[in-house]
Image 1 (tube, rainbow, N blue to C red):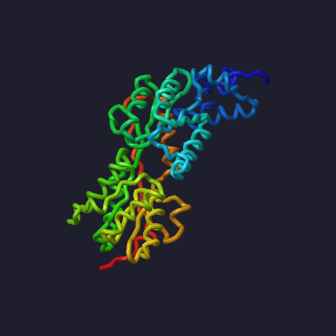
Image 2: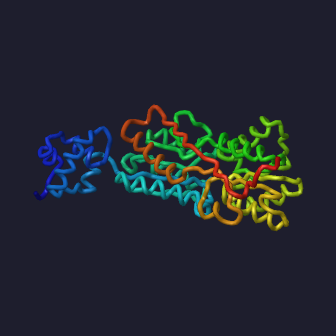
Image 3: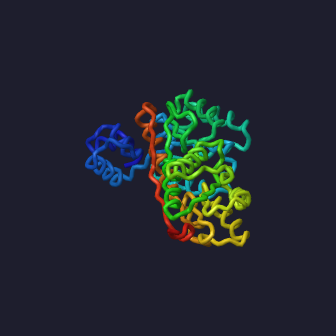
Amino acid sequence: MPNLTLEDIAKEAKVSRSTVSRVVNNLSNVSEDVRKRVLDVIQETGYHPHPAARALASHRSWTIGFIIPHSVSFFFTDPYYTYLTKGIAQACNQNGYTLALFLADVKEDEEKIASRVARKGFLDGVLIQSGSFGDDVIIDRIIEAEMPLVVCGRPFRPANVSYIDIDNVISVYNAMTYLIRLGRKRIGTITGPLSRTVGINRLEGYRKALLERGLPVDDALIVEGDFTENGGYYGTQKILPHNPDAIFAASDVTARGVMRAVHEAGLNVPEDIAIIGFDDLPHIAFTESQLTTVRQPIGPFGVRAVETLMDLIENGINPPRRIIMDTELVVRGSSGVSRR
């Protein structure tokens, strides 16, 4: 049957044209029986929707934007973003969307990107990796355009914004509590950037655990990092003169730098200094001293972000969606055993 239309498929399957459209576009609110009937007709007839016609008929571009603001300047050097982008891309492929990546090399790029993505018909929705105070400008611009938006990471001003995140406070609190139960009393930390909610929240979890267990919060044991290996290395060199017996690193990449500095100082992990990281990146966690770390579901996080954005596209942007995904403390050799 040449030049088939949605109406032809609908007639053969004995359903409405809109139902066929939902099946073709892999949308929800179609029963499994009806979906199977429509797919059977499509297979029998060899129908293939034309991409341009699909976009015109639905008034959609079938393209999702992923914006990396200038604040995330280490996008290409931090493997976290490799796993996150892979999850986002997989979800886009599975749901028939094209992924468009926007990188802001300098702060001035963000205004240009905001203007482009806010144009009606250019994108169906936007994901943005955020959590820095300055990113609120670009977020506000997209919200003003009434563009479906999901922020990856909790924004500084979460009101009226859909976002997906983990509970960074509780995640670090649990890791710190584990170290304290092992008998570690002078626990240092190399934080994430304190201009970002993720860095602030992970430091809050660190402080909370110490205070609730009656241990002092010693500022000499706290050094601001930037999620890089060098940040962990040089931060640890500042902490070592203050005799830590454990260090919590705000990322696995940071933990790799911590280990390097500890070993260069002639100290052993975990006998002298226990170490815990954050992320559970495979190429780091299983090297050297078998890193104990907080596992967050990075790939599934990207998939869930796309699914949440699709929900906004299909069902409207209000009320804002707030998704918090679970983490897990994965205990390996770098944290050692109980000293009690």
